[in-house]
Length: 307
Image (cartoon, rainbow, N blue to C red; front, top):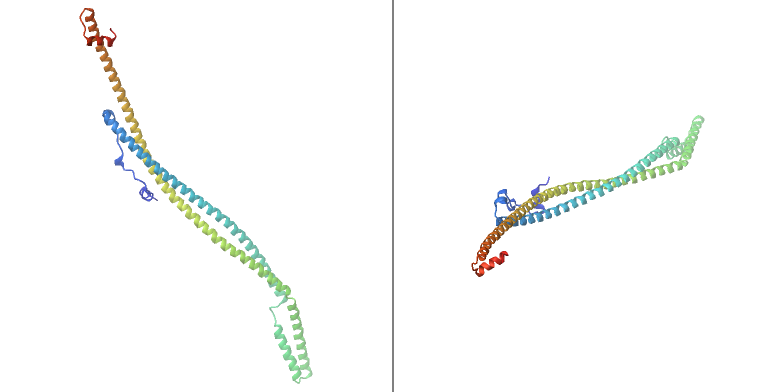
């Protein structure tokens, strides 16, 4: 499982230093001077912007990792589809191989039956029978035999000649056997070709299966990195949001102070106007009583509208 520290190092992520964050206490907000609050607002704004930039960079890296994860998943899916396609071909060749092997077995069984019918594997061969006949004929020609031995020898020669003729007839009938053997061997050869294709395609299917497993494993690893990068994004974004909220609070407090100052200035102006009005009324009273007014007194009367 990948760690946050490993992701930071691997993808060159700027770490967030908590010491650079700006704090705002309730005492600062309630009792800080306007100048102090303006300064603190600037600090909060600048740090907020830095954190937003940091969050944006982390989000971009996270999105890149998510895209790579999808690519690996797509790659794995392609290998899965190719593997399944090859496995279908493997099954087709297996079925054909088994069908041909069964056919070849039947043909070879027929061959054995035909051999038994012909009895080619039993008795003496043609060459052996011919040699025996020659030996018997040579004996007949060279030895002096009585009538009984002569008759027995002739019967043996005739018997051998009869067996030789039967053997030759059977050999002449083996053309059907040869054709059957050839057909069986051809079917067996075709079955072997399908078996070879089964082996080749199964090996390729296994390769795609292994590549599929590896692609899924890589996708899982990258997804873990993307999840850690998302946590880093959330960390920076939440810090940026907190700074923004504090910045807004300071701005609100400054507006309250501005409003308070404006109200105080308004009260001061009203109080001043009231004082000027009272002074002007006193001057006007003196004027009505016949006292001489100087220029400053006249200007005060004009300012209040009494003259």
